Amino acid sequence: MTTTRRTFLTAVGCTGLLGLGVAQTNGQSEDDLARDSFTLMSGTADATEVHVTTASESGPTALVVGGMHGNENAGYLAAEKIAQWNIERGTLVTIPRANAEAVAADARTASGESDLNRQFPSGSERETELARAIWGVVEEYDPDVVIDLHESIGIYDGDLVGGVGQVIFTSWDESASDDAAAAAQYLNRNYVSRDDYAFSVGAFSSPSNEPSGLFSHKAARDAGADAFLVEVTSKDTEIGKRVQWHTKLVQQLVEEELLTTGGDGNDGDEDGEDDESGGDDEDGGNGDEGDDGSDEQNEPPVAQIQSDAGGRSIERGETVTLDASASEDGDGEIVEYAWDTDGDGAFETDGESTELAPTECGEFRVTLRVTDDAGSVATDNVVISVV
Ligand SMILES: [Zn+2]
Image (cartoon, rainbow, N blue to C red; front, side, top):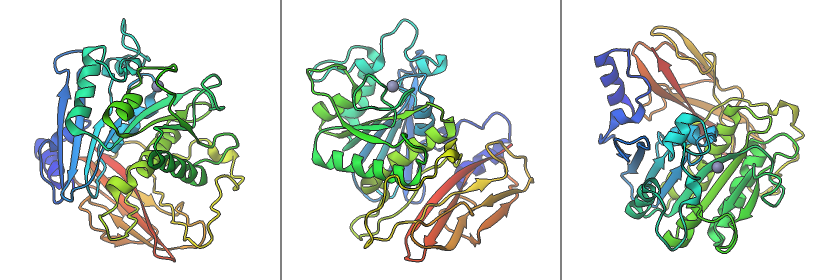
């Protein structure tokens, strides 16, 4: 899928292009995806990118926002990964760094500014130019699903006093709260191993209650979206794990809208980006959280790539080994491993591990697809940077 971009990077050379990311694919048509990006508040300290991925198959629209609070790193890092997802249908709009100036300062708010996530009063005008610009994206794309990614330092204890980590706040309608509950259950089963770190679901507060002016509340009330505000916790948790929680939750929340192909009952485990960091969950593993409770249904496998390059960039010609042996199937076994090592969407090699020695500079995505003994599939991705 990224062939064109890789060609472009090679033609220009190695230096100075990494990190430009999907801007390089601006306006390009890939086989079945169109990617575009544009800048809000261009020319100001608030300038920030909006990414739009459109599948050839029509479908719902999802908007994912990160960086509303600039010191909540997992939210914007996850949103940047999500911006690069390949979707099966519909439209994915992302604003990874909603408050770019606050992100740059690693602070909750930009210097001298008030909290951006209090500037979206329901039923009335947004309070600042940046808030109006962000709301303009909602008005333009009319998303069916809106997800705002945040981070907390505590654990949710049922109110907002003890901390709001590990919770999916949801709009009131049944479809949204059902989706939130299913996503929380999936995360708790597959990605939470410590006691007390399980995700909960909470309903948005009513319009008359504090806090008010939240973006996700306005998206539900004024734009009629299924809206979610996701809080992961940074309490004793590494950044890689927090980013994984966000990306996996978003994947669950938009799966039905964007990641499945229409109407054929294929539950398409098309995966987004995953940071395979084990975080610091190794002290848990008591195995009884979440619980499946559904013997009649096959539990899908979990795909997991481990790279011997870790998160670092590799040099041209250097060999990197990708290992899928950490993949699991809770109720059976994995019977097939398949790899797309050149990002073209086709799985050209198999085996539990694979080696590659890239000869071109740039970033490319490797996808692992695992199949369990009941035929369910799951995928994981890593992006390899070659310098
Ligand atoms: Zn926040």
